[in-house]
Image (cartoon, rainbow, N blue to C red; front, side):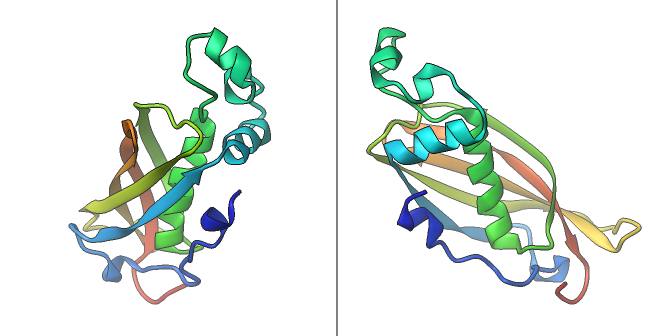
Length: 157
């Protein structure tokens, strides 16, 4: 991945349920959409469809250029939420919908906010949090959706 993506700061300790409130906004995350990012993440996810790595064939199939696959987007969404939540967060549900393609030489900006927080804890002392997010590029919304995760109730783990 590009330096701009790998240089992102992540939370070294796990955020607790007590530290989270509905309405809290996550910091935005700008992701430069390089050819290397689009191709390498498609191949890493074992998606060998030519529209993700061959610009000539992508154009022949009706696209403007190669474009990011949903597995790459899903991985970036998961990283966005876990970078905010910390290493002990457990993602339980990622529900995303794709819109405008992520083409090379653009930037996708992920933004999100906490939209729900559980009042009860599970047997392991964790509570559920829901983050609603959006990833937009120069064409509009590339990804929208929700991520549900579990956070510990008390002190950081």
